Amino acid sequence: MKTDLTNIKNIIFDLGKVLVNLDFDATIKAFYDLAQNEEIIDSQHSYTDPVFYNLEVGKIVPEEFLKRIRELLNNPNATDLQINDAWYAMFKGVPADRVKLLQKLGKKYNLYLFSNTNELHIGKFLPDFKAQHKTDFTSLFIKTFYSHEIHERKPDVSAYLKVIELSGVKPEETLFIDDLENNIEGAKQAGLKTFWLKEGMELAELF
View 1 (cartoon, rainbow, N blue to C red):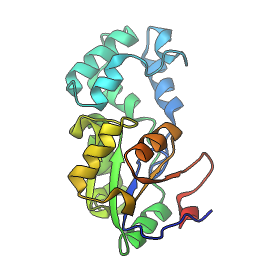
View 2: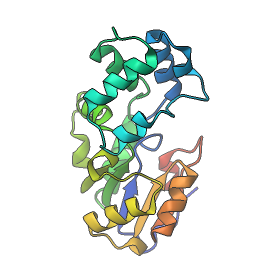
View 3: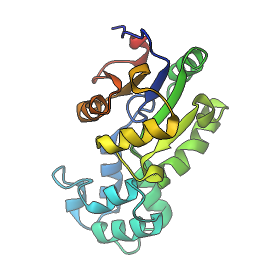
View 4: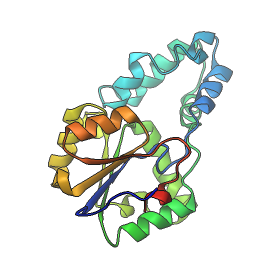
């Protein structure tokens, strides 16, 4: 399904499930393997503790996150490495064809990234990406915006307005691509053109 790129000069990409493959259950399972408290892996409770939000908007440092995860797991002996590995287990890499697509699009459009993410994930993702694709992830974009650095997250309209301000783009000339409907709605309210990349769709289908 091709999208209308008339008058589009800029494209803002989401990271998770748009560029990088994610498996949230992999992290839940990894936490379960560390846990002495099964509630951490219950689908009703996973990722609901405020510590996840606070890390994502940069309100806490990684050390505070790791301490809280030990409490949630009821496992004071879990090491930083074990928790970090479990937390990162959801990341399943960026397919090479998506990297090539970004490189191609970058010759015609100004590319940006806006992701709800955190210091721990990005700290491991960037070197992993370079090792896999032999190029810096950030080199694919004019600028990258991470929620923990700008202290705002999707779908808050204020988050998009901050990205618009910091990037200097005109919303009416800018396409925002995300896999979550709520994030798409927030972007629309900020005046951005949008495309909702639904489950099962591949980014290349848009272009």
